[in-house]
Length: 366
Image: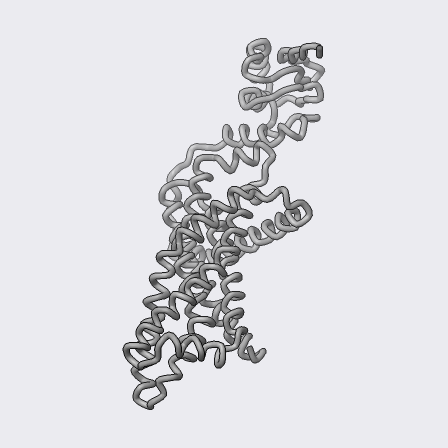
């Protein structure tokens, strides 16, 4: 039989010159032995605190240490407890918020002008952290949060299938209708196949998918992370020594990157179905004609160009959503503002990247 564990010694204080040596178990159940002595020594603070012999610590013990020290962690403190001491003492030192001073017109103009730079800096910071976390994950795939990643795939992928399929179906029908009216004037009905297929595969398929996902998933990522910041859940993760990037952001990023090409392929198929139905009724170009002609006149590279663009769009949408969520303060106003900014910025970057891809692929002859 193994011997029973010996209980930790009660909290103790030892005064050595201008130093206070913290000893034993500084948790709530054992602070009574030292609380009166610590409160008596508090008026002479700040002391030089030494914590080599500190065996255990919780938030109440950290708060009592904050009354004795100068706001920094004690000398010799175990690295496991440094985030706890920093968090507790930082929360205790927060001054009550006063009404912000009135700002002039020039100040507000400058603030609005610098806001995009602050947003870009946040994006690049989150991107760097995600890439570092991805490198760690490649070395040890067991660190991936599989359940969270699958949850993102379900919420951002499977749950988005009906709306994306419906809108892509309608979009394909509109393209066939508008293009068919013009082609019918010149007797070039058959070319509706190339018009609809190329437009869907290269542009509208990935673009409409990205816009819908930005409004659904990007906004959801921002709201979720902003709420967690308001509830101090992210601070709690950091206190426990866990990385919010690895635990929260990376599964969202990977999940959306996997979901986007699948949703884009679905949008392409749904758009073609809508186009076939309209072309059959308007131009007499039915399913059989589409089935034979698409492989003959539309190269596979056009399909893969759209799929590749969708992967990049997924990266950007998840990155913007996570960045805005981590920037939010956590109050109701900030959550609404950052969620709106997330959707607007995601759509903006998607359209900008789509334009850049169009120029690049044209120069490469793709």
